[in-house]
Length: 342
Ligand code: SF4
Ligand code: SF4
Image 1 (cartoon, rainbow, N blue to C red):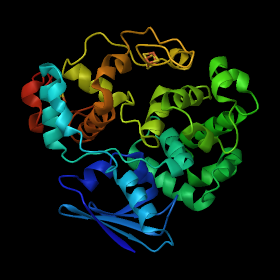
Image 2 (tube, rainbow, N blue to C red):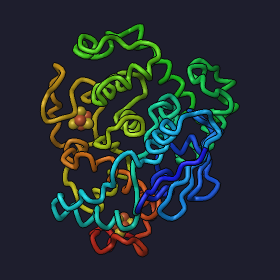
Image 3 (spheres, helix red, strand yellow):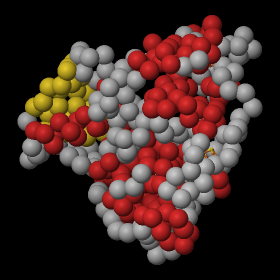
Image 4 (cartoon, rainbow, N blue to C red):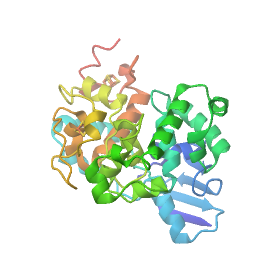
C-alpha cells in the first residue's frame, strides 16, 4: 500500500534524525527511512520527495491506520511550530528565529506503540553519543525483538555481546526496577496510587493511559531514570510537545547565549514528589523550584520540545561542548560567547 501526504515545508531528515524514533529506523538516504523494529518493523518505508511524504507498507493494515502511524512517526500529527515564535520576548525570539531558519521543517515524531523500545534507547543515551546508541539499538532489536522484558532479566554475559559499555547494564537495571514498581507501589507518590491505581501489566499501556505529567512522576520513581530520561521518553511517546528534556546541549546553549541567568538543572528528588507546574493538580503540590531551567522555560508552552530539538541539532552541528564552531555558526551575531571562543 502506498500513501502520499502533502507535507508542505516539513523536513523528514531534520525531524527524524534528532528523534529517538530514529532508533527504530535505518536511513537509506537522509530523506528515506525504513522501519526495522517496533510496530510495522520491516514493513514500512517513509520517504520525502519535495513537499510530499510517500509512505509504503507491505503490512496488512487499513489505510486509516497506516496514515495515523505515518503522521505520528513523522511528526506531522501536529501543525508546524514556527508560527508561534512571534509570541516570545525579543531576547528569546531572535535566537529561536535563527535556529528555525537553520533547521527548517522540524516536528516532533511520536510512537506510543513502541514505548518500550523508546525507553530503552533513551536510557542508553545517558552520556553516550547518539550514533553509538543507534548501533547498540540495532543489535538489541535483533537479539530481543519485541520482547524487551527479556532485556531486563538478561545476564551480563548476554548483554556484553551487545556492548561492554555500562549504559546497557544500567538500562537493564532501570527496566527491572521500573517493573518492580508494580509490586512495590508504595515507592510512588501515594496520591497517584489513590487516584490512578497501582501500576499494572502491561506497564507501557498503564503509563500511556495517564496524563503525561503523572507518567513522568512514575518513571522518575525508578532507579536510574532522571528528569532528562523521563522527559525525552514522554516527548517521543505522548502528545506532549510542552515537555522539555533539559540536556547538556540546552544548558550550554542558554548559557552561551545568555538567554537565562542563574538557573539550576531539574532535580530528580523534587521532580518525583511535586508536579512540574505553576499550580497543583490531581492532589499533587506544585514544585517550588523557581530557578529550575525547566520551570523557567515552561512559558514556551507547546513550543518547548521543538525548541529543545532545534538546540540539540545546533549542539551537534556547531555549538559543541568542546571546540564549538563559532566561526561558521549562523547564530554568532546573537552570541556573546562567539568572540571568546578559540
Ligand atoms: S521545576 Fe521542580 S519538578 Fe519541574 S523540573 Fe524543575 S525540579 Fe523538577
Ligand atoms: S557562536 Fe559559538 S557559542 Fe555561540 S551559538 Fe554559535 S557555536 Fe555556540
